[in-house]
Length: 137
Image 1 (cartoon, rainbow, N blue to C red):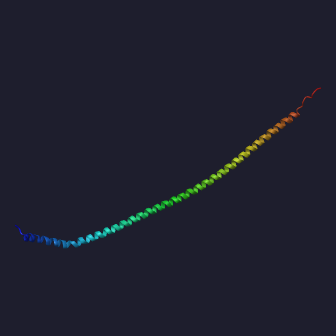
Image 2 (cartoon, one colour):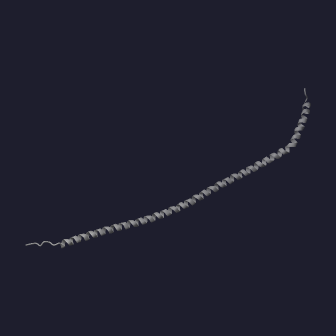
Image 3 (cartoon, rainbow, N blue to C red):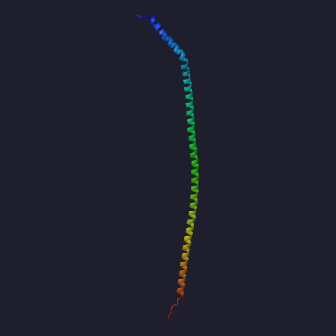
């Protein structure tokens, strides 16, 4: 049987080599780990800033859209007021034209009536001027 001293004496060079390798490369691994942790922390911080900027940009776009809608609303309101004014003017002009047409129609009817009466008077006068045979007794 192999004794424990033989196993430990066989493992001693391996342990020494492992320890030397570890002592040689451990500071590099620790530094790399620290760098990775710093890098991860900075990356998280940058991602947070990017998300905040994205939120601010989204809000700014929403405000811009609201501003554009308000501006568009004002434009359409002015157009509506202009159309209402124009419609009121057209309605007023239409009423005036209707009144003029009615007056003109009444005037034409009155003139036609006067002509008809004048014609009737002329016929009546002509009838009276026509010689009638005298009555014989």
